[in-house]
Image (cartoon, rainbow, N blue to C red):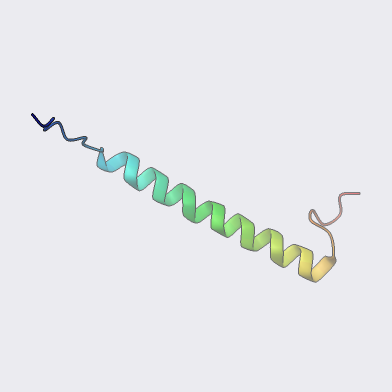
Length: 46
């Protein structure tokens, strides 16, 4: 006997996670850019 239950994922959750991942990548690139240009992770914050 096999269990034929399939999980369905709502499209809204997939879209939300995709957007979340893209903003996380954008934030990481901004942090790297700030570090490379100023030498600080948060410019102006001691």
